[in-house]
Image (cartoon, rainbow, N blue to C red; front, side):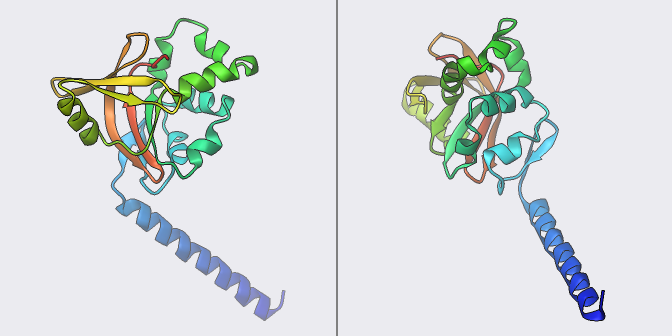
Length: 189
């Protein structure tokens, strides 16, 4: 390798370190929320963050099985009500394994899109809607059916079509293409 080539390679390496340092410094300045032991960066999209949460392995696997990765990496904005692995474990034994089978993709997609609201809805906005609605607010999901939001004390809850309630355990996890609210129960259309 001649001297000119060595200088070019050295310059490229130096630039890559400088660029990666700038990106890491920017990420360190972002206001992150810890979910599943990992920081969620507002500059990353829903999928880029969700794959790092140790509490959302089942949800990520289900999103992949349903073919929704590209959608949730898209522009959005989306509000995702993200059940934890513990929430999925509350389902009857074998439910998750059955849902992720290729022949059940349509059913899985329906359940997952029932956890997504079009637009970016902060917890503050949802609380205001509940207050304006005299204790409840109905919001239409991407799947097409509605969820009912309500509050109890300082907690925000969501009731599904089957009458089950989920509690928001971590609110306002901002993403580049929306917001995630972590919930403790899987919602069913």
